[in-house]
Structure formats: structure tokens, C-alpha cells
Image (cartoon, chains in turn orange, yellow):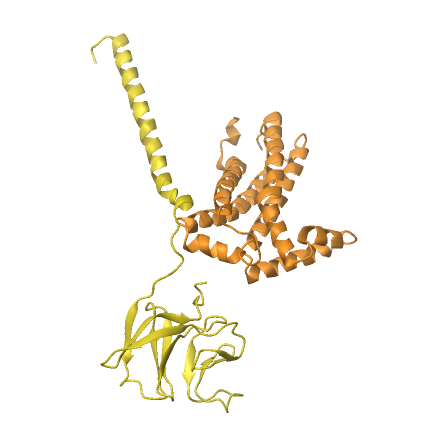
Length: 189
Length: 174
């Protein structure tokens, strides 16, 4: 560990990962009670918050960790930019990091809609509108990601949020960390 | 410390080992202690029904026919309304509008556009109108009727609120 890297701003990526682990643990616990159907999703979230012992705590930790992870990821990105750590030979790791950042955003967005209240239904409609507005490929994206009906949409959001996005993130993180190890920490300013 | 260095090191290292062992056991217990409580998350579940208190609202002599009274139920932060209907019956509702949670009033002066419908429950925010007889939505944006409070009147004419007859969950507590 070089001396210049013994600074809190070099801990931002690690703390982002720590929150990812917290989110994975609390997310698994939440999935024990969450029901991803349009009829039951909101009620099951209410039940988690009101009737399951410590459910409010698990849900709150998941919620605040998600927000914290986004904030820390952005700060980590600023640190990498500020210290020039994206420069050769670390360009590919910057790309992996941007991928992780985007996936974090998507995870936040899909998690937000899982409550399936009025706000979430509205948000899913807005997301679909944005995706379908992409030239040429938009309608295809819209159909693939949102399905053909309201039941499809929530299932796909739940599947993406719990399996697809975290799965891809774990792979990208492994690559990200392996490249950090291989390149070492970038030099002092 | 005058004792020889070698034996001193030995005793201090064995007591350090004992101390570290105790520290590990202690910190392990500290970690496991809350986990034992948290295990209730997977193992126990409270029943979903909430119980409501029985609270004295008023006396039937205090609210003349056609008048209303604002009170709080089931706690002091939640407003409710007691109405003495023209038919002589007493009814009470949760006075929080089911649309966006504004205060509902029993107004004898009809609002604009509802001049022919006197004695209705109104919400000033978005012009909601409710039927005082059963809490049904007569107009405006509310998605569901007002929650109706169960009333009990004893031989002295004291009126008690005791839970809800219909219309649950309460707005803001869904």
C-alpha cells in the first residue's frame, strides 16, 4: 500500500463494495417475504414493514444502503477522475467501473419499482418511455424489458433486480478487483 | 519487574493468549446476541390485525340533532368526526380524506355546485363530498369511502368509539 493511498478517498470503492454486500444480505432476507405479483407486491411490502419482526429494520437498511451505494459510487468515480487513475494502463478498469455504475443505477431503479405502488407504476411507465424512445432498437428494448402486460413487467423487474443485475455486477466486480490487483494503485499526484 | 526475562515473557504470552481467547469469545457473543433477536425475522410473525382502543367521545346530550363534533381517534394525532344525523342516529368516521389526507368537515353550508345537497361531509382540498349516512363517496377524487368508526352508546348516553366497522385501512396507514 503506497503512502499516498492511505487516505479516506481511496476507501470509497471499498465502502461501495461493503454496501453491496449489505444489500445482498438484506435483499435475500427481504425476498423471503416479497411477492412479485401486481396483486400482492404492495401488500407484501406493507407486511414486511408492519408485521414481520425487524422487517422495518431490514427494509430500511436495504433502502439506505442502496442510496449510500449510489452516492459512494459517484464519489469513487470522482476520486478516480481526480487522481487520474483512469489513464493507461487502467482504461479498461474505468470501463468496467462505468458498467458497474450504470448497473447500480439500474438496480436502484428496478428496486424502486418493486413496491408497485402508484409511484412505482408511474416510474415503470417513464422508464419504458425512455427505453422505447431509443432510435430503431427502442420498441424492441421496450418489449423485451417490460413484457406485454403489467404482470410481465413486475416479474421482469423483480428478476432483473434480484438475479440479473447483481449477477452481472458480481462478475464485473471480480474483473474490476482483479485488474486493480494487477495494475496496482495509481501513482501520487 | 525483577524476574528473569525468559519466564516473564512466557507468562505474559500465555496470559495474552488467554486474554485474546476471552476477547474472541466475548466479541463473538456480542455479534451473536443481536442475531438471536433478529432471527425472529424468519421465525415469528405478528398477526396483521391491529387492535383499537375503546374511548369516550361525548354524551348524546352534547351534540344536538344535525350537529357534529370533531374528536381524535384512535390516537390524539388522528382526527375523527361524530355526527348526529337528522334521523337521530349517531355516526362517526375517520376525518382524514381518503384521497390525499386532508381534514374533512361536516358543513351545513353547502359548497358551490352542491347547493341541493345539504349536510354533507366535505374535503376542502379537492372538493370531495361524502355521504354522512354511510361515508360513501358522492363526488370528487377519493378512491374509497371514509372509514366508519363503531360507536357504542351506554344507558347514560355516553358515546364510545370502539374500533372500525368498515373502510380500513386508514389513510396513511396502508
